[in-house]
Image (cartoon, rainbow, N blue to C red; front, side, top):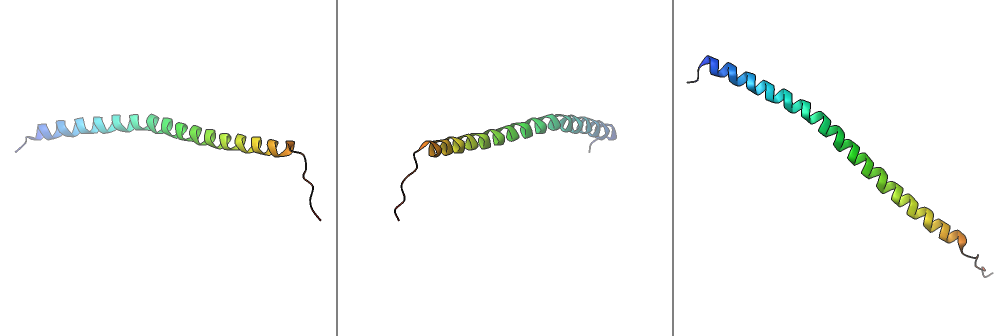
Amino acid sequence: MRSHDYDLDFRDRARRVRAWGIGLSVPVSVAGAMLFTGGSVSSRMSAHAEAVRMLDGLAERPPTKQQS
């Protein structure tokens, strides 16, 4: 059976590791959220630019004659 001092030491080490893990996870989470947001915005802006180019191409075509 383990001694009382061993248990207290183990609890103290575990508490320090948990506190460090939480402190590290916050900046990593923020960085991940920023990368995800930046990627989403970049993807949407790319799709928007492609749609604008397509509309510009349609606007430059001469009008077609419609049959009556």
